[in-house]
Image 1 (cartoon, rainbow, N blue to C red):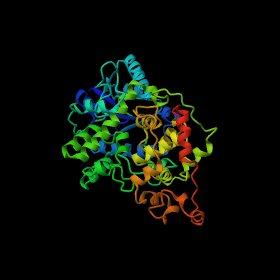
Image 2 (image 1 turned 30 degrees about the vertical axis):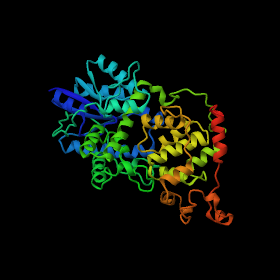
Image 3 (image 1 turned 90 degrees about the vertical axis):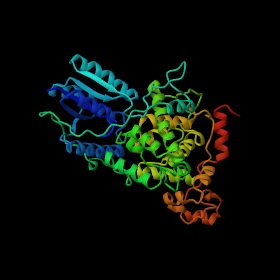
Image 4 (image 1 turned 60 degrees about the vertical axis):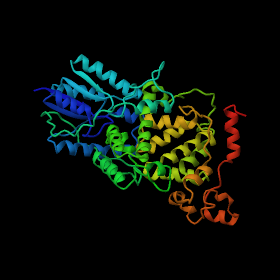
Length: 458
């Protein structure tokens, strides 16, 4: 009786799961394994919102496996140690794993290959499980990755994606492989009140409802509408692999139309960032493009940073977005861009401080897209216009013209008319005082002058 182990990481689903299918083809019995690695907690990436969402994903994955005669084996401890112990206990000859792109994933893969190899166990690493197109599958002449999105997207769009795999009909797990009780959402504390449910079932339901309701068809024209809340909200499910990026692309293309094309473009952006970080893992903490920035940090900008985190900057659109983040563990993509630009360019604060705060709260917060989107906003990443500054008032009037998004998240301004809601400092003094809303923490013109001087563009 042959046995294989499937180590689940950011691929917590049964549908379109190449490592699981390969293991089922090669072995009579399979151990679906997830390891709660203390290294993730020690690095500060085990945030309450993601921990709760992960618990939902693991519970849903276990339910799906049990309906097929199997179960999910959960272990706690250093991942390499636990994988090797499970492989030894069941006599596995292979371990299957989806390829990752972070420095942590690279180290994990290297150590697994070395440690398992000494025990005579083969490590099988599968590409294009977490992404639609594998990092490194397309490269420009003379480089190991694309540094600019547009040429990457052209090459990405020419790739033939594999056909999504159906969920297995049966999974037979060997006897005698011991695990721990699955973590529960209630095991954590400090989660956002509006946190969505996790898991493949919830993710697929979300995708189906959004598509049926016309969300995909209207995506091109409505995805920047802050008040309309018209985006897919699928990012948490893609982050932990409860949804397959390959399947999402296929389904959108089958639907067709401008909305589908715009949605697929966002999935392409996700793959773009993965191929950047796969080639430059240090970009998760170091500037991708080095500039002579003299960022302000916690010591000399503590008050401004606290106001930004708490949604008390005096700029309603920024404050609405930051309060949405705290309440839902999620933020609209347009809002992410403008809050990041505000912190890094208007307040001239180190992008790593903002990226850390987002990782503390975002249920979809992953090292790849969070860090590289922050670098894009800060002008240290792949943006071809690194000196662009998003004016929060201009952005607010364009993407929240009636002020509905601001009213939803900044109730102090609920009674302010659309003509003044994005500039409450222009209200008469007695009205401003009655609002109990702070004045702007910085003058936009002064902030722009500071940024241009710091970047040497006077």
